[in-house]
Amino acid sequence: MDAQGIDRSLARIAHAILEKYGGVQDVAIIGVRTRGVFLAKRLRDIMTLVENREIPLGVLDITLYRDDLTKMRKKPLMAKTEIPFSIDGKRLMLIDDVLFTGRTVRAAMDALIDFGRPRSIGLAVLVDRGHRELPIHADFVGLRIPSTFEDDVVVRLSEYDGVDEVIVMKTSKVKKR
Amino acid sequence: MKLAAKDLLGIREMSVAEIELILDTAESFLEISTRDIKKVPTLRGKTIINFFFEASTRTRTSFEIAGKRLSADTINISASTSALIKGETLLDTAKNLEAMNPDIVVIRHSAAGAPHSIAKRIKQGVINAGDGAHEHPTQALLDMMTIRQKKGALAGLKVAIVGDIAHSRVARSNIYGLTKMGAHITLGAPATMMPMGIAQMGVNISYSLEEAITDADVVMMLRVQLERQNRHTFPSLREYASRYCLNTHNIKNAKEDVLIMHPGPLNKGVEIAADIADSPQSVILEQVTNGVALRMAVLYLLMGGGDDAN
Image 1 (spheres, each protein chain N blue to C red):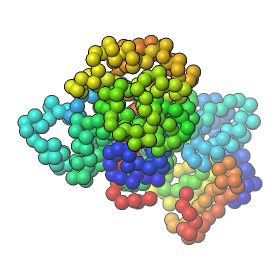
Image 2 (image 1 turned 90 degrees about the vertical axis):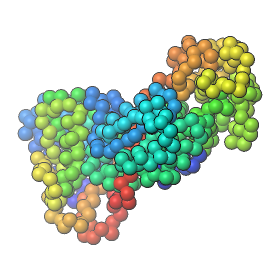
Image 3 (image 1 turned 90 degrees about the horizontal axis):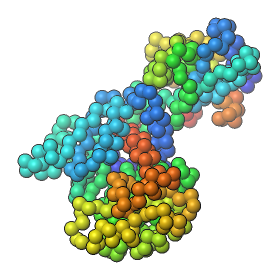
Image 4 (image 1 turned 60 degrees about the horizontal axis):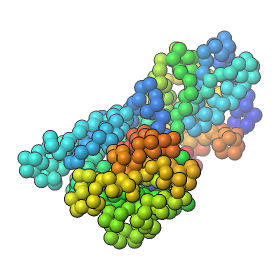
């Protein structure tokens, strides 16, 4: 998928979210670090443009909620969680780049529940590559990519990687993110 | 990125990259303490023993809160309630603690090297929470974190450390840390409180408060350790205060935007005047707030999982 494809997918997802919620009343967007944050910003911008209303945007780092943390000696670098609004009663839309095993989403939901009691949590992802290990599904998907478990599905975004693209590496020769 | 050792025993052994990793991680942990629900599940099911052989409010509470906010179980043992008063040796106590399989042991002891000696003999990670007049690494790290927040960077800063240098593990750890990070340190103390050969640590020495803090970006005042003054290092508290108490008058020697720090507890009117300790330039309470986040970062980074899985 190229830059144009990503733009089209995000535009479609943004409109689908607006359609589902009938606008942006009580809607807030939460991007999961790292690339989910940039996707969340882009979606927010599209939705703001359509509805002409401010939509709260939060950033979530799920590192501390990972289920494999204490099994690693080498810890992933942590970044800040910034949710500058109360999530109580909000309809949250969680945004991430790739949906794979579902463990990140599980961690993100646990993290959000620790911040309050949202009215609902939805999930939008740019890519769904299958191989779920938990009973989790996305409400909005940009692209479904059939992959083997060993493949690497790489999302690159211009804000972070300098280029917009989604590629599938058939072996794991690519350097792991 | 990870810490090289299973333990955090002193700043002396640490690299600049390790110090930066801890400071950066701690910044991310600050936010957790501002939430309504101040807890993350990161260290669920882990056990931390706080073993304090010396009196402590701040450090012990800080470690306990840090552990609890990460969902670890924290157990506090103090010297007066431990079997040491029944005659058990330190090492036997440590071996028995090891047998109960905690994950991290935090130790404060009046003997320099006590945590190191225990760390060598037990498999769990050991954190030095202050050993004699040797090191107090988490205090120095939280001091560096506070300075970095306010000044942006540590390199090139002029830092004055004034007071009871001879008894101060905080001073030693800060000297190791701040010089590694590129700051310039001047120590100020009466000659009786200035240890022999301390200049070899790469610091300037002054016997006057005013001279030591001249043009300083940061002034770190140290507590006169009344409980350790058996060598008669000064004639009276009043005389000490007249020459070494930081007040609104002598602070003018430092830069206008000077940061005033103190590791606590304060002897107000002895080493620091009350109005200076409570002034806008004082970051003494921010040091305490940062301390919790810093210790959360250290516990998080040291909590081992055996071999690298990632």
